[in-house]
Length: 393
Image (tube, rainbow, N blue to C red; front, side):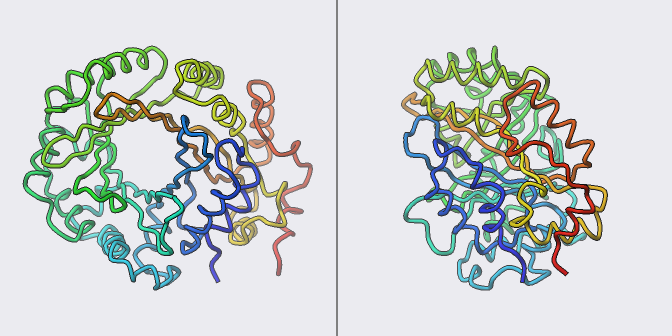
C-alpha cells in the first residue's frame, strides 16, 4: 500500500513547525486534507501563512512533478482513491493530467509542472477541492505568442471553453507586457466561487507595475500601489504580479516578493520582517516563527518514522546519498484589496533532496556560520550503509 502524503507531513514537517505559524490542530487538519494523496506525488510543497492574523492557520499547496506526480493524477498507477472522483473537479484534474501526459496533446510540451492549492478551514469538506495552477515553459505565454495550446489546456482543465471575454482580457494582459515579460503561472480557482483565471506575470520592472496596471484597465487604488511598490523595490530582488482575470482585470492583485539566495539573504529577510512588524503588517510572533522555520531534517535524525518508499529508494537507487527534507521561506506576498487594504502572507517551502554526507556536512557548516537554522540535531555520524540497513526486509 502506498504511503499517504499525510504520513510525510506528520513525520518530517509537523514536529518542526513553529506553533506561532501553524498550530498542531491546523497541522493535523492539513494532514487530514491530503490523506487521499500518495506521498510520491510531490517532492516540493508548502504552506501559506497570514502574517497579520493571530490565529496560527495556513493553507497548503504542492507541486506535482511531471513524472511520477503526473502519472498518479492521470490514474496510471491506481494509487488515487476512487472516492476523490465523486467530486467533478477531480475528474477534470485527472483529464488534464492525462492530456498533459499525451505526447500528441497541444500542451504536452508546453507545461513544466502543475500545483494543487488547498484552502484549509473548519468547513473543509471530506473530499477537498484544490485550485489548479500550471507553469508554462518560459515565454510560452508572452507577447506575440500563439495561444491555441493555452485555450485547449483551459478547456480540458475547466471542462468548458474559456469565454471570449475572459480570453480577450487575458490576451490583452499578456500583450501589454514588456518584451521580456511572460506568464509564469495560470490557474483555475476551483475553490473560489467567481468565474475568473489567475495569472502570475514576471519580468515587469517593479516601478513600471502601476503604469502597466493602468494600461490593462485595473481599477484599484493606484496611490497605495505606488507607495507599496516604491518601498518594496528597494528591499526585494524580484516581484511577480498576480492578476485575477474575468471579463476585466479584477480589483484585487498580489505582489509576490522574492529574495536572491546569497550569503546575505538571511540578514535581509530578518531586516525585512522587522520592518513589516513596525508597519503593522506582521505580528511579532509570526516574524519570530518565520525566523525559526528555516532548517532541515534527514533520515539519520528520524529513521524510525522516515517514509518507507524513500528508505527503499536509498537502498536500490541512492546508495551514496542521504534523504533530506529542508525548509525555507519561499516568498512573501502582498495582497492589495480594492479599498486599499494590504494583506501579507508568507509562503513556506519544503523540498526533498538527496545529499551526499559531504554535501550535508557543508550545509551544516554554512548554516552554523551564517544563520541559526533549526537543524534538529548535530551532524549524524552514521554511515550511509548503517542508514540503509534501517529498511525492513
